Image 1 (cartoon, rainbow, N blue to C red):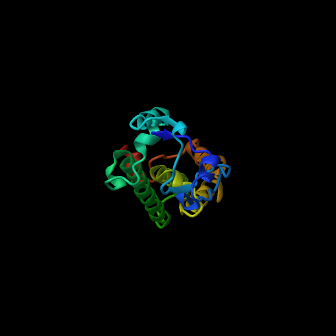
Image 2 (cartoon, helix red, strand yellow; image 1 turned 135 degrees about the vertical axis):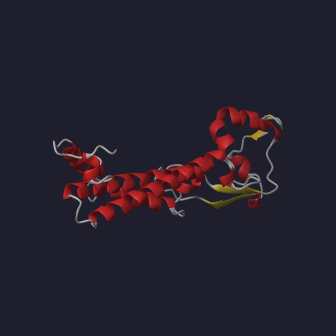
Image 3 (cartoon, one colour; image 1 turned 120 degrees about the vertical axis):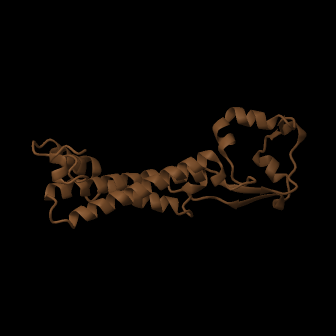
Length: 208
């Protein structure tokens, strides 16, 4: 069933019949209104019925197919058991683990006196670029898994997104500075692209 609820209909009901429990304060898109409301013995005139019982859900599903089929909050099982949510979290997990491995590799090369400084520079910049870009992707994917509520200011996601966005832009922007530094290293005649992974001896012998 779909009902047309107007301010006049609300005014004709008792005060306790319609309650606004909360109005999420969003980090952006602040003109959006999506209050959390509660209806208790709320009465709507028969003429405000837009469709009879049993026909409302198909209409909503037709208009908002993606949202209606992906909204699992309040369901009977944990959201991790749903494939779409699990896929997002799996992607986040893999990005985090690969970022940690790349940072670990960069630190090991920095501590190795036998490694050329240009190799150390390149692997360090790779770690910075990849990890900070992945941080933004992870936060955004996690927000997609949670849904609209993740954008509310009382959630931790807006803060995490603001902080994650800092690193690809500052401390040497990933696009304008760090990737250009790697580009210059890659165009040098003496560049050995796999030396950070294999020793110079291994590269010279072609053991790639």
